[in-house]
Length: 580
Image (cartoon, rainbow, N blue to C red; front, side):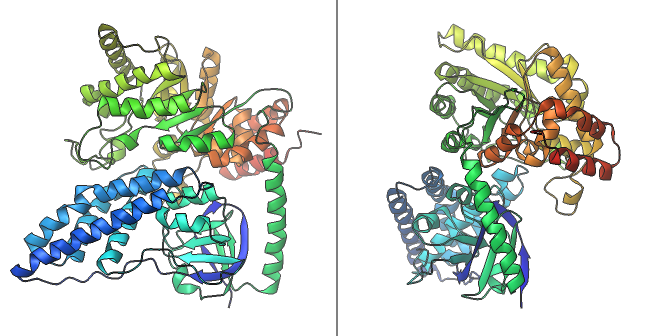
């Protein structure tokens, strides 16, 4: 009987093949009490498992194939770092003594605490790092049990094998890279998990977060993996199979055409240049930026330096991370957002408690201003890195003129300190404000004299405008980027920035959604910042758009107050033949 499973499509098109199931999920961890004389041996068993796991990861890191995605080494390095975290590698020893329990239970106790910290983080990318913790812990469990951690491969492997797993780690991907798998499906994961990022890099059709694929799919069953729609079809009938073969051929042809525009300049049919820049999370993401043909980095989130550690990063450590990215971009502009931390992204070293309503609490620029020494250390590092390329600083969560002036005052103090120490920096460093709170959009005319550019963070702007938690499944259907109020605020921001002669970009998910490209172009946007994976699809729309022909439909959309009418008009806008 044919069944359909729904999850998160990571792209890579459509694959049709036979299922190969592997078991990567941890079994229920047993809990048993030990006698006092048994504790030393149990702690020794745990330490032996830690050493074995570290050796495995280091060997895998050293054997990464030359043609593997650049991110693979970075992710394996992260797993080694997590393994060295005291919460995983040392604290379980104390738990074994305190509870007189087995090593597995002590490890589970500590990993549960670490995972809970990640689950409290609102930022999706950072929250999903809990999967990396679980993947490292899984390897330790297997070494405690004396089991192999190598991704099992069937022999011989079918040419059309589709991997069905509970989860896949970056370490698994070392083996996966040279396998014959044509697609994979997992029970868990998120759109910004490392599994998803590597899937994009490998350019494989994949669907994650299906919840129960391993339970519902049998070995060797025919499976269709639609990475575009996020659908997995098990045991399809002849009609469905024929339809998906047709879609697969169409997708391959469309991808071939997209590849041909990678090196093309993003210019509309009437000659208007459009800037397509990238969003990144880690310094290692620069390789993806270059491969996508981006002309810069429009948003580099700096939070990775501050989370998942017991102590604050030093100024020198921050400087080196920023310098690396700026230098690697070889003159292309790099916009680095100052730390967007808060009660929901609460580092271990933070002295601030957890707010009842984190999104409205001490976060973003508010936290920076509440911790001026911490903030100024980051600003000093950014200023120092500005001599190594084209660096721009972006302040998050600005709600009006007062906090913007305070942030600029801290930047001036950092400049003064560096001058007094004879440390060079770019005296003409450009500074921008993120427009992600409705109040900032509404008073943008008071901000234009104090910054060099604006960046619209549509993810939070939608959340704050519509009072919808974008991470809450119960209200996710109400998260609407084309809501009339959202469109008004974006249009107001773009219009005010353009009138003041200041560059403005959109750096939220809207920028990478090709269905909204023409609408944003019609609103006057000329700079889009997005995940590198979305670059070519947006560029294709730009290359097939004539700006003068967007005005009528865009105007009707912006004047409409009925969501259904907006949807219909948007379809008309996207169907418009600009080349005619």
